[in-house]
Image (cartoon, rainbow, N blue to C red; front, side, top):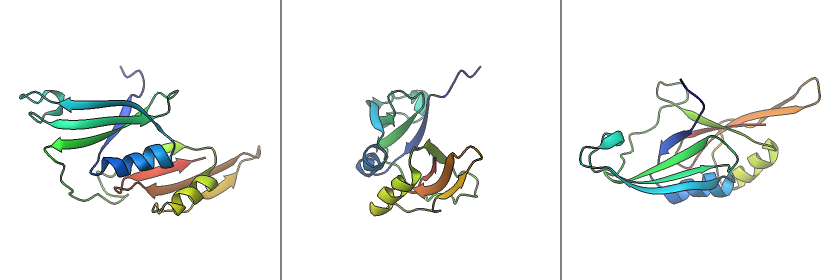
Length: 145
């Protein structure tokens, strides 16, 4: 039986650009790093001898982290990304405390937004907001306040 979430992962081409986004722009921290070399039989990767750098980013108090997987050997191929409505498309969603400020910050950094923030106020006066952007490699990122 499933007992909770552990991590999600993205295979990345430019590890530094992705760290600049997830760590520096979004404020996540590096929780764990590993240099991983699979044995000749491939173990859980299914790729014999695969050499990867794994960097897990998240919030220290959080349960779920994001794994940035950089393949050193074999190198990853860029086969394009499906659009939001196509099979195989995926996204990661973050809860944020101030969507308007984060949208302004990310826009100033040149982050591409798919939608501008949409806000509404609940009956108790709580402001809710949502928008989508893309990380530097085109992965869809949802931001919810």
